[in-house]
Image (tube, rainbow, N blue to C red; front, side, top):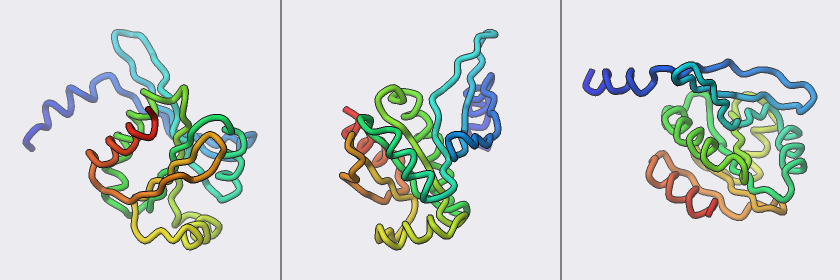
Length: 155
């Protein structure tokens, strides 16, 4: 239980809203809202994609903006561990970059994308430039490596 008190104090005032279905945009959205002293601040979103078509629509609608795609599995421990780090980057850089995630074990079209992209491990991150082209792909379970790679990509 080492560090439990500090974790609780860090999470004090943080309320998670469940994912909601947005049929107009064809992908689910995960929103985090922080409440401090009665002030509510909405954080940027990490889009939860449910199909390959949703990914294509997201890339098309975000032309002119960088996109970070997290490819993961619902059974992957490191994927769950790194999600708060990805959310932190979304909060800090959400104006100039779109963050998205999909679990490839939820839809067959996503499994086909994993085969097409030759992904051999998760979590894998695909970084798209402003034209919608994948410029870098890497797999890591280390928070420091994720942080440095995203920082270099976003700056």
